[in-house]
Length: 375
Image (cartoon, rainbow, N blue to C red; front, side, top):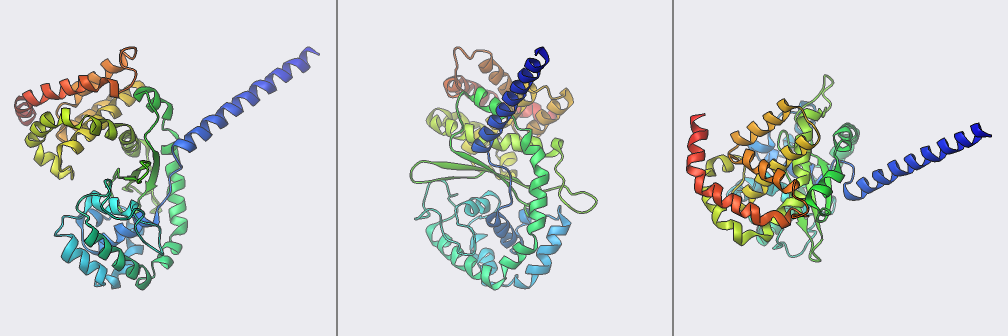
């Protein structure tokens, strides 16, 4: 009888553990969908590759680039490509603005704006109603003329293999840490996209709908392949980037809420590191502050999850080299916040302290930059 009772208790325990794992899995899936390839992202990366945008012309995934060239090379003189070269290049449309448009349109074959009119607050400002309308008209024509549907069908298995391989990166993301650290749920939905045509570039655009709902994207580039030419996603190479992008869904709206208090210090700092920021396609102080806080939080996450010191130092040095000269001190501020959660239950409640921190940084930025230059 004792043995039967013991077995019964073990079964109950195993069942409870199984239910807990299922609940965590379901919670994760609700907050963060599994990674996938998105036709809209691929289509626009292909278009801007054909238009010779250097950021979309990398050859880090040779097998896929060869597939693109074999199918689309004869369409390099299509009216759409000519329009991108003659009109959109002059407007500075490239890098993140391409991906911004991609998430603001419906999936092909019937491509149209998800939000009408196009003058919404989440589409990057280089897109106007006029050039957006013309671009979508020509994009629909291109999709038919270039038989894009056949290209996507021919690469379906490649897309599936890439997203399956990325799952190990996705599955290691500790979502509970984010909610605990920030003291709130993410603002809106979050999606991970495997961008096979983007090379080494990753982007974090978002779309805000008229009802206030928003979807934040982590558009992850593909910059490494195995001996068979299929994407491989090593944790050390890709995990810091996905950590980075997911932070944006917690950080950006907080920075925006304190826009007026941060503007003066942000303008001073940005003017001093403008060249470094422009190289990364960060064109204003608000984006710089979004990135600064996100990058510092990545390091905080690494520390809290006992990453080795070498990895953490490498991440810190990378941010310093990218012009975020105050990152070490900002991480210390985040540690102070986390050690005083009784006073600061959410990151937003700590923002007054960060305003003070950035004001101090602005007053010292000349000296800090000179030290960085000497190094």
